[in-house]
Length: 192
Length: 422
Image (cartoon, rainbow over all chains, first blue to last red; front, top):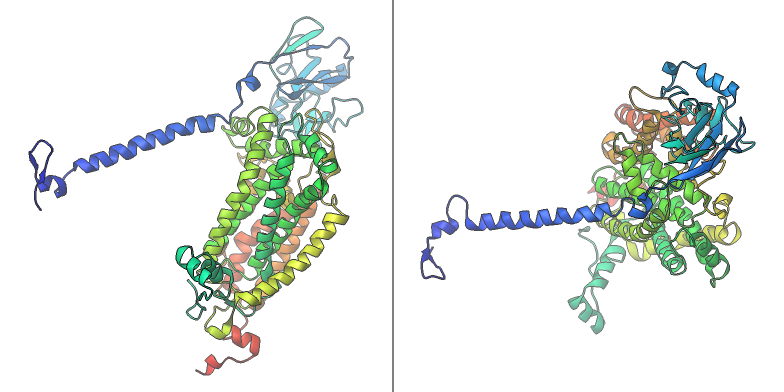
C-alpha cells in the first residue's frame, strides 16, 4: 500500500488507514450513526406525545351541581370530563346496609365514611364509569336495575356494586371511583 | 423459487418483449399466479379462500376509499355524515352496505382459510413463516375492523371503543395512562374518532403489504395440498393458470352470490340496531356486543369473573383473550406429528371437529348477554380451547398412529404413479 497524500502535503501512513486499532473512519462511523440515532429517537417524542390528551381536553373542567331537588333514594347523572357522574342521596336503610358490611371481606376494601364527606354520608358521589371496561352502570336513573346489592349494576359484563358503590360481584376490580369534589353550600356540589 | 419444471415466460409480441426488458412485471405475474407457477393438482375448494380473502381486501379498499370521500371524521357530524351517505349520496346506501357486509364476508372467508390451515396442518414446516405472517394479518384485520366500526359514531361504535380501549387499562401501572394516550382523552371523543379514521385508512395498506410477504413466503415451498404429501414430480402439479384461475373464479362466483344475498336482501342482519342511535356518553346500551367475528374472543374475555392468584379478573380476561390468538403463533411447534393432513390422522381429526364446535359455542356465548349460564359455558369452552392447543394437540401428535400416506399426490389422485415403479 502506498501512503496517501494529505491536503497539506504530509503523508498518512497506510497503517493508519488499514492497520490495527481504532481508525479515524470507525470513529466517524460511530459518531454519525449515534448522532442520527439520537436524532431519530428525539423525533419520536413529538410523534408519541401528540397522541396524549390535548390542552383543551385537559383543561380543568369543574361542574357545579344543585342537589337540593334530589330526595333520599334518588340519584342524578351529571357530567365531569365528558364522563358521567352519579350523585345519589342514600336512604338511612341504604346507609345501614353499606355500614353492615365488614370492609375486610371486600375486593376493594373501603367504608362508606371513607367514600363520602364528613356528616354528608348520605351523599354518594361517584363516577358513573364501571371499573371493568368503562360502561355506565345502571341504577342512577328512575326505574333502572340496581343489582342484587341495591347499588349499581353494569349491564355489559354483570358487575354489581353495593349502596356505597363498592364492587361486590362480577369482573370489575375496583369500587366506582370517587371524583374530587367539595360542598360549596348545603345544596351545591362542585365536582373537579 | 419454483419447481424445476415450471414453465418459463416467453413474450412473443415485440411490445411485451420490450416491456420484459425494461420492467418485467408481466413475467412476475406469470411466475406468481400464471402458467409459470406449478401448483399441486389435487387442491380442493378449501384452497379457494386465500384468493377470496384477497378479493375481499380489494373490495374493502375500493368501497372504503369511496366512503371516505363522503364521510366526515368529527364527532359532531360523523353520525349525520353516515346518514348522508345512506340517504343522499348516489348509490351511497349500496357502497356502505357493501363495505359493512364486506367486513363480515372478509372474516367468514379468513376464518375458513384459518380452519383449513388447522385441518390440513398447513402451518407445519416448511410453511411456518407463511402461517406466522397469516396470524399477523389476522391481528391487523381485527384492529382495522374494530376502528372501522367506531367511525359511524353510533351507540355501539362509542361503547365498543370505550370497552376495547378499556382492555388496555387492565395492564398494571401503565394501563390508565396508556388508555388515555390511545384515546387522546378520558373517554372516546373527537381525538379518538379522528385517529381511528386515520388508522382505519392506513391499516388496509399495511395488510396488503403483509399479504405480499405471505404470498412471497408461499411461493418458496409452494402450496400445501389435501394429502399433505409434498410435490415429488411434474405429474403432481398443474400450472396455476388456467387450472386454478378457473377454479378460483368459480369459487368467487359462489362467494359473490352469497355476499350479494346479504348485501341486497339482509344488509343489516349482521349489524346492531343500537348503532343507528347516535353516540351518547351518558347511556350504555343494555347489551353491548361486538360484531359477530369477535364473539369467540369476547366470550373468553368475559369468562374470567374471579381473581386468580394475584392477577385481577379483568387482567386475566384480557390476557386470555389475546393469548387465544397468540397461541396460534406456536402452532407449528405444538403439533409435532410427522403427518400433515387431517385425512390421515384419525385421532387429530376428531379433536379438530371438537375445536370447531368449541369455537362455535364460544361465539354463541360471546354474542349472548352476560348471564350466569353463558358465563359458565364460556368458562368451560375457553378452558377447552386452551387445552386443545397446549395439551391435546401435543399429546395427540405423539400417541396417534397415522393412516398410511399415498406415495405421491399423483398416486392419491390417479391410484397409480409411474414414479413408484422407477
